[in-house]
Length: 258
Image (cartoon, rainbow, N blue to C red; front, top):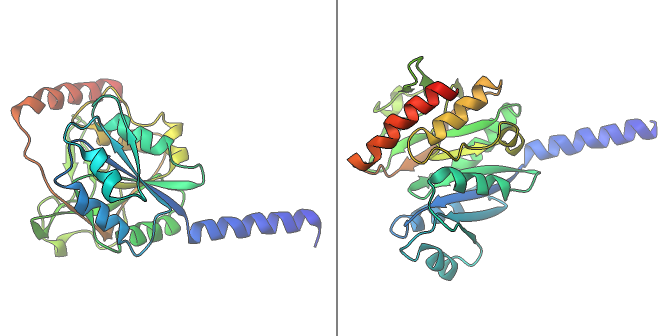
């Protein structure tokens, strides 16, 4: 075997090994999450597939969240932002602070991952390594037999059509399924793909922050998959009328810019 063949063989082997056991950087986005983030962090630390590192990106919390995390989770690095500009700048910092040879698992602070969630996402990555996002099935935290949703299809009016929203677990998709868009509650992301499309749009403060990013990946030619065996329990927050402005504004912004 020539030296060139040996080198090419070694490169192919390293690629296969990378696919078998990819390194994962987890980035948890939080704002005043002191009442919920413990369950989130504990679920990440208890994963059967261990992440390489866990980061918390704090959106200028006023409830002592970053100090509390540093006091109770010395193994977790906290990145403190100077102001709260919504989740997208924090998500971008999570991706930027991910090493180039890692995948990024973005997680909201009100998410709780089943212990095999990351393992199932990694298996989906191994099956579809060309994709940009592999996302879990979202299940209501307080109704654990009910799907919140497991992916999104975008209507031509700019509205999101949720896949299997409020259906029993047994009525969800049976296998890994391609979708147009994904909730940002929890998603495994390819850093190169995210960077190629310019990361999350930081002009979005609330509403469609995640949908715009993931749909932009779709129209850029990337595939997004929902993974039904990866379960993420989501504490759904009540939204007040103060957020209505952003929902309306961002729908039009989405229609005009996509």
